[in-house]
Image (cartoon, rainbow, N blue to C red):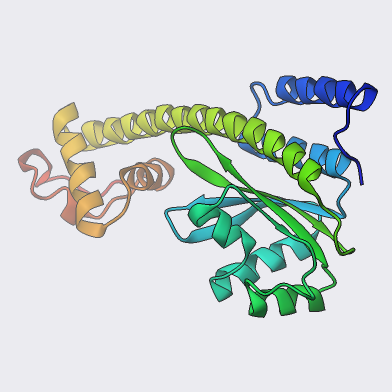
Length: 248
């Protein structure tokens, strides 16, 4: 286990954190979590590491892990509704479980994790000023594997990760929005050509079909572009399309 201490080792960690910040610049969400986990294994000296994403207030999912056992442990917390990650996401910044064999805060969870061979765990919230993104977790087969120094390292890692993930998500969402607009435009073009519609009328057809069938507009556009088919009932109420044939 590696600790933050004074002198040369602290300087080395400062340099490594700077390198991590550079490595997390302008990368995808997937690349970000991979780099964070790689650094977590090296900086904290744990056996396994994982990142959890939170959706809404209650649903969590494993975003990435260094071993399949991590995903199983995450699913266990979701199933039981208890555990360090659930607690951290709800109202804490971090949690150290020194020994699952003696853990009393989440007894059912602790017993199962102990049976899985995990003796200690460190969980830290990943958050920005805008949102809680999830948690960064370190696992060890040994009891008492983590202390306050490891906790401090994990907090720094989690902050770097949260900022990078927040930025990466914004970029990916932007590209998704651009791509969605492009696909919707293509779908409009197909309807305009086949049914002699205006751009507004074609968009109204797509929107109505989306709402009537509870399908996202992007999905409707993708389906139309790929298959060149849309049920005639979706177009019938447009006067210009009443006499038109199907799209195939």
